[in-house]
Picture 1 (tube, one colour):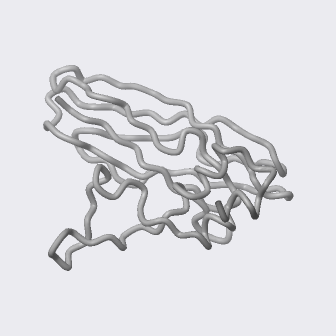
Picture 2 (cartoon, rainbow, N blue to C red):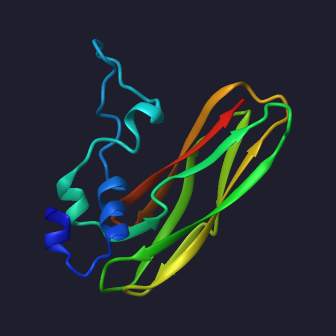
Length: 162
């Protein structure tokens, strides 16, 4: 409600992105433990950070990408389109990268950077490649968006190997 009040011109999807894609990471702990929780099925994109959400400068649609369930023996690749929108009034150059993945499931994104004028949008292609015989269970990575001032958003990428 606060983000919507501060930015009445943003769509519901942009408000949702501001909240989800600016969430604080590496702060949620495992139940009855001091160890950090890393399972995206438990923590999602992180803990809501109202100040970061109110100051969001980019929006992602969708806010996260699931490549669904993939058979272990398939050695399949899939791609998804994510729309990046500049929420600020001025131009921004956004560097786009993927952190994570593993030897069984790799993730990549193109293009590696996008320059957008205020209000402009661009499409990113996120690709998941699972090796034949990939290990069972969830595999995740993080799509990171950075400007000269640091990280402006992040998104969860997920694949379940069955």
